[in-house]
Image 1 (cartoon, rainbow, N blue to C red):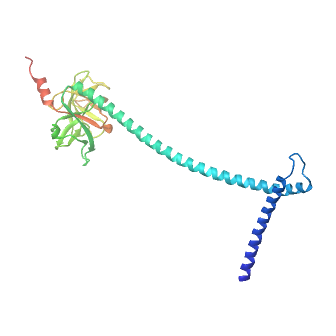
Image 2 (tube, rainbow, N blue to C red; image 1 turned 180 degrees about the vertical axis):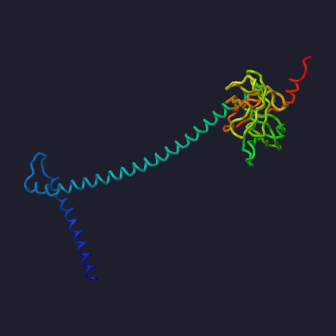
Image 3 (cartoon, rainbow, N blue to C red; image 1 turned 90 degrees about the vertical axis):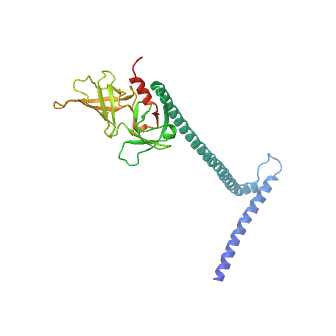
Length: 291
């Protein structure tokens, strides 16, 4: 084993020595060619032999140096490109976040603008509230808002948004209130057909559609007719939008029409609402005699 190790070491040293011999030879040959007097003189036989032997090694060395230089340059280029790409991705993420934020701000501004316009129409004292959750029990179609008795909110106060009637307050604490939506099966709102002035009661079904009940068969009702609050009952001011007639059916044995109503409010997109505070005063003004 020791002899084999010595032999292998000698072979490696011999191969290494041969490489250095070729390198020295090539360098010496190049030195001879560079000392050739006169740039216009032709190569002699010895020079031609030397150039034929050394030129392939020169070409190989030049290619090797070029390859190493290219790899080295490309490596640093790719490192810089990777860092630049990472920075661009971070900038893009920041821009996407800011763009999403600006879109949300614009959407919120548009909703608040419509609420302000609606507030000017109803001419009642209102308090704006943010929807912060749904009823946790799941038994009722209701929402939780971030205004309570500290803001003047009381039970049975009507709640609206820019599209129309949302519901009424059924529970209240100092800072929060629970709103029963008009689509809940426990909700009933006295209403009028805006065109014909026929009366009925809008009842919730705990779905996205309500029923218009107690509308006699002789009433003038058509699909697309607008329903508004009648002002009776002391909860909702008169004239607030409730919805539109979606479908009308008549059964021979029934005294009233069967009418399906699409609510004016899209409850799946409810974010801000207004709670009307001075409904009782407004209703008293409507009922008071003219002096």
